[in-house]
Amino acid sequence: MTYTHILAHGNDSEAVKKAMPSVDDCAAVAEVFKLISDGSRLRILWLLCHREVSVGDIAEMMDMSNPAVSHHLKLLKQSGLVDSRREGKEVFYRLADTEQAELIHRACETMFHITCPTE
View: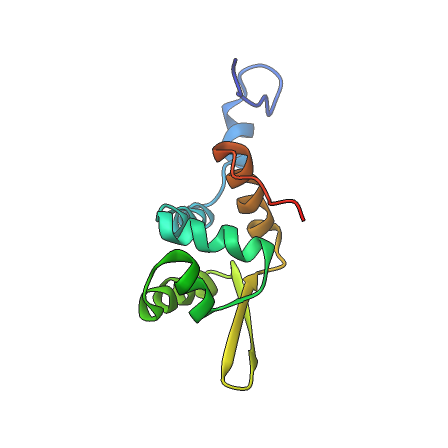
């Protein structure tokens, strides 16, 4: 099966060149792929797809230290994949409401058969 997209009729290299993403756009996408290439971050993202959770609760569920979880969350938040809100001294994290975050959620479920739990 081939997934080649036909951007123009015939062999129009100029049309393909015009449609090619910029170097900056490709670099930005590569950074997201770097972030999600870490298994712990993928698991955190999956968890945040399903509920809003504090650092302590994530650490407990994933059997990780709070500082390790905080480090991963900081990177995910800087990338725009994760949002947070403060309630007193506690900070709660959730998947960002963005198309990019939704695509990652769907990719995880499709590619890895990591399905959402039913309630």
